[in-house]
Length: 612
Image 1 (cartoon, rainbow, N blue to C red):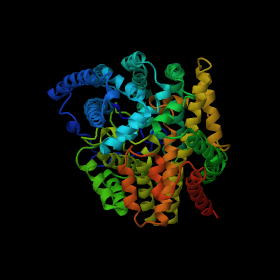
Image 2: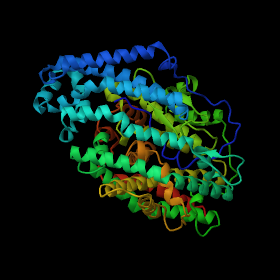
Image 3: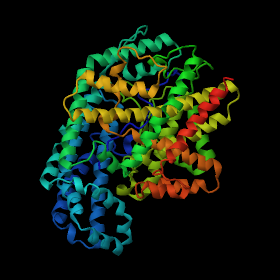
Image 4: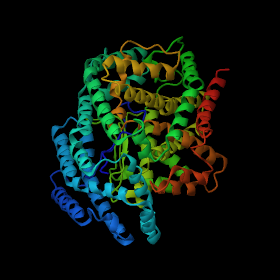
């Protein structure tokens, strides 16, 4: 409920391409579809309405849910949904304004004040989930049998009731809800504002650079410039490592306390419940990827070292451009055409759904002082539309990021038809449309390659993206698992965190890498660890799923589009087994993950064959 935007592209924080200045007219958000202005009377009106609506909802329904008939339960659910939409609209507007300039104290205060008001207003609603979870299974099933529209919302109840074994007392649940703004949310803000305010003295640069621009240099064509950026990052991260260690320790301890009280069997269990995915499915994915490290990342990076004429790669070479073709700068208009042509080639409907993002102020693309780094697509609420944030710098991977986030946007628009409570897709499937959009764009570019060198560049870029989306994210997942397990045994020093980070980096990247002194602190800037613990495996899940889906599309394109749009339109109304069944796929089959990993290996095979 009341989601703030989350960064969604796994590559944007560790794989930023350099860009030219002449990129064309980069769009900015028009947030007036949410509210006209931060001082608009509509905001005060909606805040007051929210106070009254939540209090009225509690007066009418608290202690009475078990006695409702099917029609009464449906009416209750609709009122709850109306509250959800208003609260979500307020939070979306405040959050999006904040991410446009996280160093603006007025925007930060506005978001904090809105968050406080919404939290206080909605505290009376805490009873709703608690009482739903106390209703007998047979009684609830009888309600579903008596009303088809209520039965359509059964997944909403199933997701709530998945927490039944972990539910606390009504009073304690209210307390946790009330204090949330000074718990994890406050530490999240501290992290975001600290990161936005960092500057880096990079040798050879005229002035100090912010984080985004410094990360950007890690893909510069000049190796000395990349090294200077990496060392500048390490120097600053080391200065702040005690603060970042404190943030991680506090959030991990807070989670451990909550998990202990809720009797969660593992730190990851809450994420699996939220994702509506079985722990064994995630474990099968993790194990398949780790087993594939030697034939994926280890093999590719050894190949890249040969291309670069190096015996060993340094960490600043990981995302270096290949010395095959001169670097390209792609202006905004060309990027739009590339992605829209790829979308239209799959289905005109897909292009129609993406078009308004460009024409109606639904994208904020430029790099600006104080703007949050990275990229995301935020669905806002189903009665408005999504917004996409980019930091567009004009390189081919930026085009892929545009394709990725537009895929999210298309998915969110389609899923909105399910209504507010059913629109949100579990994270395991939330990356499906985004990664599929990237694949369409990549295949379009690959088909248009005019020379072997261009094809090689495209293939290598795609392999690097897939490694960042699969291998690197599973390494991140392992780091989080180790961190949370270790935190349960006591406070973690910065050195402890550094050691955990290096253990997964060495394993996942392979023996061809040397690791400079200071790289051990690079765990500190990954936002997913702060904002969404264990989120990262969703990227690998999504990439593997899309690779399998694309193989089905390639083998039997007839009728695929209709099934694809039906899957996206389902939002959170179906389990992944139901959604994948029409394509003949099953994520619970351990062999399923090898399909996606084999596609990456096949691209590396082709690259190796080009060496002969």
